[in-house]
Length: 551
Image (cartoon, rainbow, N blue to C red):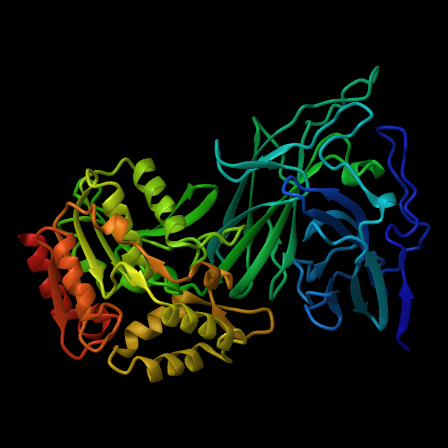
């Protein structure tokens, strides 16, 4: 019989008020299995922008049974859910302060509830801004202790405290994926106490979400010279979320004080083993770079001594968009194709920053970090807008510019169409084959192998098994009516616009205006083709592009 309990936020937490004393948080006898799991509201704290963060963990009453509770009626945070970033995989015992929920400035006396049902037992906890539950996770007031710093890159962005630093990785089925973190800490102890003999920071890796249980080589890798390394193996393809906690000497949950630890999250897309062989045969390498605090994925076809050639995809597309195109240029160029922020295997913007100007900032940082000069740029759709703006801002860095079926303007009609598309595709497809069939209906002139590659690399399995696009749903927030003439008017490099004759993205009046704005601009209209001429007629597109580059 299902039992329902309204559980207080700390579940009778008995904090240890002497620093260094281990807390005994629950007066509960654990059973090996068959018991429920309860959310734990650790408290709330202020954010610098005026919003608030609710800090949560959980208590799995089973000593041996780990639980998987999919997002839905049995694992729901409402209102605004059911998915508010909570775990799906529940380890044994008490897990402290794993995730936060941001609520707005005007949240006031409102309340959220977290409902968890497992083994026939339903537990519900309330989450609110009750003043009694305000915590200080960034500084322990008694001795001024602060959380460790945690980073996924040596010298890269780092955070302190429970709001996590996030990165994304790709992995191949059954092959170990290296996991590296860098940490530092103030190493404070209570006055008069001797420092423990253990390192100031300990690292713990756990699984947060995923279609199957992962295997860590060492879930608690030792910290040496400020870093800790382990690896993880995945038993089946899919989308996983891993969690890492950096604890200082205050221990798990700050020994009842809600300070001081730091969280990190790693999103991992796991593909089948055949994918690695296909990458090698295509001649590219998967690379990553951190720009503006975001970890971007890009494909590199090698030849670093040749002039750089950067390719940027359109909205909702990915770097693999150019798999059929890039090899034709790699003998003469160092070809790279970037997954723009929010797309593919690149990180999502926490702020939902997806305006053209945001993508341009990433391209600026990418080119600066790699110290590239004399760059050839090719962009289609939104990527085309990005390269136009960059060329106008940095005429000294750009050798040539190719814009594919896009000009300086995005109309209300185009912006609204993508918003509708995101809404219509939210529930995904039953299989990759079903997705390919859907793409074929809307792209009848594009060869199936190109569409299949787009579906394969641009999608991921959701936790319920349905196939969804590998993109941030917030992309639509930045896909707004746009006018970029102020940048286009400053383009100085040789420029060509290759347009689809059946497309209406760059109408004749805009073409005429471009001829006046950019000295010597070339405009080639490919009759009968749509928004992606390079895919619909690759040989013809290559002939036009190579002729332009040879001039």
